[in-house]
Image (cartoon, rainbow, N blue to C red; front, top):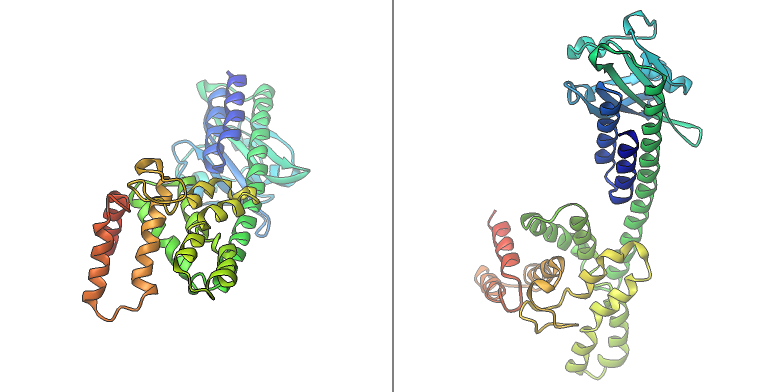
Length: 353
C-alpha cells in the first residue's frame, strides 16, 4: 500500500501544480499508512522564524491553521531547529511538548512522529502524524515511511518555488508587452487591463476557472500583440496612399502575426490558439481560418465580444445615451452571426448589475 501511495503522489506531482491539493493528498496517504488519527505539514516563515500550518488532516484541521509555532518551541519547533526526526509515544512525558494548541482546540495529542522537510540542506518546515490508532505505538518503520512522504513534500515545494519564479517572469514579460502596445497607440492606457477584467468576469459566469481562467486573462491582455508589427507596415505602405481595403487586409493579419510572435516565448504556448482565433465569427465568416461555433476557443469568443464592446463604450465618443444604447443593441443583435449568443447573454447580465 505504501508503494502504491507513493506512486500515486508521484503521478500527481507531474499532473498538477496546485500545491495545496498535493500536500493534502500526501498527508492523507501518510496518515492512512501509519494508522494515524491526524497529520499536518508546517512550513517555515524565515522572516518571522516561525512555522505555520500549510496542510492538516483531522477533527481540528481547520481550527489549527490559525496557530503559529516558533522555531525551537515545542516538538515541531525542535525538529525544525535541529533538522532531526523525532518519535514521541507519550507527549506528556516529553519536556519539549507544549500543549497550548491542544488546550485551545480541545484536541488531545498522545503520541506523534515529526520529521523535517529539508531542501538542499535548508529547512523548509516539518511534517507530523499524531496519535497512533488502535492503542499502538509509533516505531522506526513508521518514521521511515513518514520520511518517504516528506521527500514527496519537498519535491512539491521545489516545484512550487520554480513555478512561482516562472509566473513572476511571465507577469513581467506580459507587462513589457502591454507597455509596448500602449506606446504604439494600440490602445489608451489601461485599455488592455480593463478588457481583461471584463473578459474574466464573463469567463467566470460561463464556468471558466483555474488554468483556463488564467489563459483567458493573459490572452485578453495580449490579443492585439500582432498589431505592433502590422501597424508599422500600415504607416509605411498604406496610410500615405489612403487605401482602406489594403489597410484592412493588413490589419486582418494581426491575429496570425500575434500568434507567431508568442510562439517564441514558451510560457505563452497555451494562449496562442486564443490569440490566433479572436476574430473568428460565430457563423464561420471570420478570420483567419473561418472556424465556426464551438470550434472557436471559448476564450477567443469572449475576447471578440469584449473588444467590440470596449470600442463602443470607451473608444468612440458618443454624444447621448440613446446613441450609446443603439450601438449596444447593434452589438447584441449580432449574437449568433458574429458573436457567441451565450457570451452576449453573459455580458448583458454583467452590464445590468
